[in-house]
Image (cartoon, rainbow, N blue to C red; front, side, top):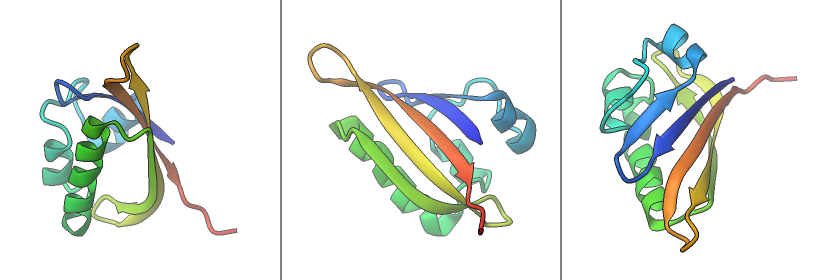
Length: 104
């Protein structure tokens, strides 16, 4: 499983150790999600959908989830976001995770 914290107002993403180790991400990713899209972590045919997710997070959507093929190998992951709001209901951060989809 991969996990990350996304600060909505600054578009900064802080990846977990596995994200840094396996995907080559730095400890702080600026202008997220563009560097992850450029690196091929999110394939081009999912790029617009993923960008739209970030617009939805800015607009205050509480949760998002989908199965997305990640990396050049297009490995299916269940990607989820949960939004944290301030006391006035403004979205502050979103917590993301990606869990490998395993066929039983």
